[in-house]
Length: 243
Length: 243
DNA sequence: CGCTCGGACTGATCTGCCTCAGCCCGCGTG
DNA sequence: CACGCGGGCTGAGGCAGATCAGTCCGAGCG
Image (cartoon, rainbow over all chains, first blue to last red; front, side):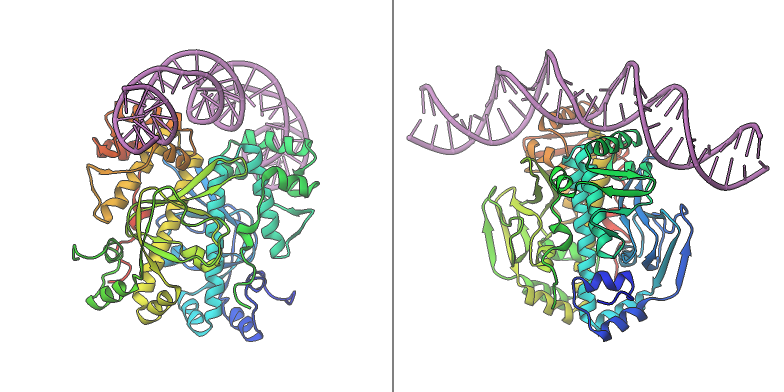
């Protein structure tokens, strides 16, 4: 693997060994580079004919708004993640996408995507793999919200972020930068912001993790993994699908 | 559409107009018919080289077990639904699959599936559509558990089942047969069985729905839809993807 | 026939998390 | 400079839903 590759290539490369030619094809896939300011929705529920994007830098979140005005964040996307595959497939988006920070993303034209898939099927497999991994994450969130208590749920989420960021080279086993506010965490974890605050304090007092000033510091990885019952197989499955 | 087609063909046909030839191809896809008894897991977490199935009759549920022994049901599959697409893709299953009732299912060989896809791309689109719809349902469950209260959540779930069953001809606007126990409902909705019982009683006393003796009777569809804030667009999206 | 067992159902009590209401700090801005 | 505002943080009190501890009923079975 070459450090000069994009986070996207880096992520796919971790699971499907890519040839030089495939790397080039992947680079060509990146269309116009666009910049989105933080906080202003990129995509709305019900919006049609949406483009797809590959995130180059920054974080975004996908969420749904409910009738009473509350919202549930379904997932975050970090650099290297694919954005809006389902919206393209359905022609209509069923959720909102909001940049958490300033975001840079390459537009991917549906035409180019389909062309790439038919020319280099291995890349199709890789992207499909990435999409399924996203689904596995949503399932894991569902399990978390349904059956884990607030503290365990929070710990689990912080560990998941850690694993994902490490994969694209944006963090280490001991910590990572995280631009999420406690309000965003609350909307993700199905909690109130007040309670998120208390839970974070408890985790800090237990000497497990500290999340302060935009940085997550993991003090006791093993302890945290055990406490959260974190089993990362849902993130990496069987390792490389194709050699 | 022809009533003699399988629920699977009927479901796909509702969204992608299928030719006679495509119907025939679809029929050939169905491999060996297998029968599974209720309650005995068909697939376990971590099991590898799993087959995929198309459900012909009966209900199954996909769930995950947690360290403390509780479980979270992620989704149910009803006749016409595809089973284990992700397990095949990843070679390893990340969840359990348990028949709720006695189940009949046709095995689908990965080879046949891929062959069908390359020969009749419209079917590939249709199956991909179905898979994405499943993901949209999981997302909706996540939103439900995260942000709706027990009563609203339960009502929403019963309405979702109604819409899904109607699509495959197993129910009407006024009700449907439902083999789920209150324990299964509890594991799905992230509630305790005791509370599910109370919530069902309230919904009954409100004159909205009755769920008793394996049958769901919707007394006041409009009232229920409004109460649950049920917006079924996540189930049918833009209508036919392909004409 | 009585026994067990699974599932629906109920009351009493407990608790995790929410809501309300507020303080504090740092930062951008008129 | 004051001030407004977003975000972190905290205490008090309330409530939705869990837990505990049952009863009742029907189906399967020795």
